[in-house]
Image (cartoon, rainbow, N blue to C red; front, side, top):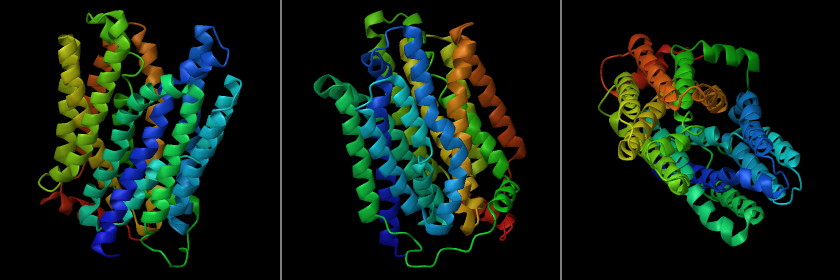
Length: 413
């Protein structure tokens, strides 16, 4: 594949991810209002249905993502991304016509069987470039993934009063359709025209991937960073009200803080590729986790709106940088015939953090909102210490780290 098409593939994967995540966050933040519109009036029931509906897709996807990854390794990721985006188009369209909350839950659970395009777009970009540019490619796609949640709620907030919540789901479907067409028309599979790969047994491949030097550590780091990153949702609006913001302004202030965090995380994902040209991955991850821990501790000891906003920007950038670096290192370990499978396993670790974090944060936040941030500081310090102690640090540039990690892995894995 020539360099121009390679770069086009990376930009296409990044843009499709951004458009898709924009479509998701365009409607999902307003799900409680939609459930109320369906006739549920009790607040506890609205909260219950919202939690179940939001958790259904990532819970199911966490189990099936590696299995779809195996199919992607055989037939190519492009086909699976198109399949996934078609599923999003159909289910979001159906959500515009539901009449009861259980129907929303059923559709979201069904969607989980076909979701996971986010990890596949990362795999598509990583497969399209030489190993030396893998970190840059992954950083570009994750930048798109992070920017989507920054744009989506704003667009949704403007659309909902104009077209109604039901029609907002149809608009979200249009976003997914646009992402699908972009992949279909512009992206060229790196092994297009070749026969499907002969595949080893799935159980054997999963076992050998998990035995790759450093891969299990990467999964743990992804889970831990995602757990911290998603812990703010249940408590941030309440914490904002405690630092002196008027009740009427809490929703908009909270929305701005979430958007700031998403944009800074996108910047951190982009920055990771640049940093890895000069620094070892180990140093980038350790500095990123410790920087996030210091910023988080600032929220605990000096609660004011401006310090919270500044800290959220720093935390987002630091976690975005560290997460993208972990993905780049883990991706460099994967053999060609298990690329999408490995990214599927990383998706499982990511989604487990996504599913568990809000529940744990909501539970411990009942004893005091600051406890959530204290717990995040502790977890970040633990992750930094583990990375400093257990992560290999070969001499030379980050490219040497990636090549060295790949060389350590068995070519038969």
